[in-house]
Image (cartoon, rainbow, N blue to C red):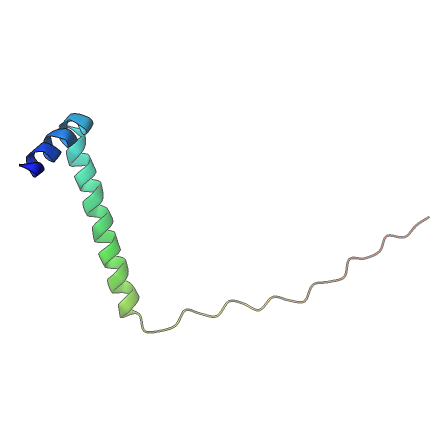
Length: 65
């Protein structure tokens, strides 16, 4: 009984046309999350180290005339 009331409230709030779009977006989000999790577990190689920055040069002093 409670689920029927919740379904009616959702239908009234979002309308019949908007619900499939919301569910499609939710499904794509879950699918992307699962792919990301399986990709994170599958890669056993560590990410490459960041490049070492070159030492900063001292700013040249302007000659005063």
